Amino acid sequence: MKKKNPEYIAHLRQVMAEHGIDAVVVSGTDPHQSELPPAHWRGREWLTGLWSENGTNGTAVVTADKALCWTDSRFFIQASRQLPGTGFSMMPLDGPEAVDLIDWLTENLNEGQTVGIDGMTFSISYAQRLEQELTDNGIKLNDAFPLFDYIYPDRPAQPKNKLFIHDEKIVGETVASKMQRIMAETKAELANAVLLSALDDIAWATNLRTAGDIAFSPIFVAYLYISDSDKVLFIDPEKITPEVSDFLTKYGVRQLPYDKVCNFVASLPKETRLLMDPANTSRGLYDHVGCTPVFGGAGIARLKSIKTDTMLRNLDTAMEKDGVALVRFFMMVEKEFPTHRLTELELSRRLRALRLADESCVDESFAPILGWNANGALAHYEATEETNATLDSDGILLVDSGGQYIYGTTDITRTVALGTPTAEQKRDFTLAAKGTIALAVIKFPVGTRGSQLDVLARQFLWNDAKAYYHGTGHGVGFFINCHEGPQSIRTQENPVTLEPGMILSDEPAFYNEGNYGFRTENLMVVEPWVKNQYGEFLQFKTVTLFPIDLKLFDTSIMTDAEIKWVNDYHAMVRERLTPLLSSEEAAWLAEKTAPLTK
Image (cartoon, rainbow, N blue to C red; front, side, top):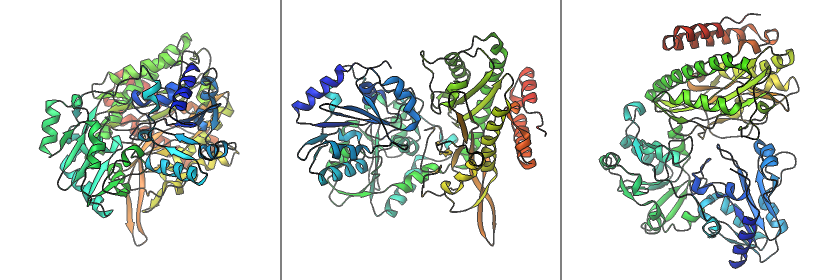
């Protein structure tokens, strides 16, 4: 996306004046609080110019004399490149100079002034906090200011891609079973109906998917209402095929147009106790609720996070297919690297083509993060025509990528040395990789939270006075979102405990700014380990299948147990992938998985 003209800000200010708005807060998401919203709702990116294929975390504020865009440390460098010339200045969401957006509003507005938001793109919980703090300072909130209806002339339409059925033989559970379990959780939270707003929850509950509504995720724009007596999918009728209609009818799910959801919740009987997730349901929708709202829904997110045995068996198939594509990709990189003509964008295109050559791969699971040398030190780097580096000398290549297979979602990072790595590079790589291994082998009791394990991954870097500042592990969906909650492994406290069937990433890292970045990421499944007089214990099973670059290990700082883990992991990779490869590919894999020794 090109940088935007500051005239857009002038137009917005004119509209604000016409509607009595002194400051507008512009969300970066949609009515479902999606991490990466459809193009129709990516207006904040259109307005500010802070944009990427994978989306950018950010919220904008425009007043009569200021235009500011808040974003987090993952995008500071990107913002410094993209915001100049747009009329917007960056504000930090985190870090030592962080500024709270709501605090800024209360400090810079006067009593009696009005803040406007499009309530359909702000969660209930955020809007309530915003309204309370503004009210405490005598400032009013107008939560029905759909600014992009006024200022975005060529706004993309809402998506109308056709749905398809995710084969229940692959999923291992019917829609009827899922809805029964959803209602049990709903009643446990003292409600008798539930409205699902999060798009991944809806895709999971209905066993339906699409391609194209949201980049890199096969989920679709809809709402889903469930009670004992009624089940309603709110969706654009153009998205429904006869096959999907018959499928929904079989499970007693009727269809209403997407834009009828507000009228529907307004007309629910007063005795309805409607469960709504305040973090994923929009304030604009909540404003229409005519029955008793019940805030909650964590139990339903938990149901989605625990994969069936059938899903996990099929995930193994996805990992094998992904491993084959990556073997072919990295063989190509090694073969063509000496020409010094490969670029980051060209490699991204080739990697995508190799994955999509398998008919079971519907899309990538995110835009690949493919960084050469200094670009690899940017945790969320995305190559553009302006930054596109050529692999024109020895160096370090970081490749973070994944695929959306009907058999599961993959996410893997490998860092490889093209040429001979330095002693410093090998040490830094190994310190981070030791964290990957430490997390992979830990055993832990039932009831353990991800935050309790996070230090295991960071300890080796910390002991060398080094660190990384993003999370260590995120939950992963099953042919849904690559980033899926509620489970995580990170420094910040998360009350969710790790349970068998959850999938998480394991991705400690180190970034030497301006020089190189290292990250070794595998996906892991939580599974039972032992049960004894001390309780039940769990472990992680690493399921990603691709070798780790042997050239980058500094075995002098590795224990025998760590070296054994690498060798055992590589033996598994070799055993699983070799039967799927040509003789040339198998020989390459054998070389890359040769025993690591001190």
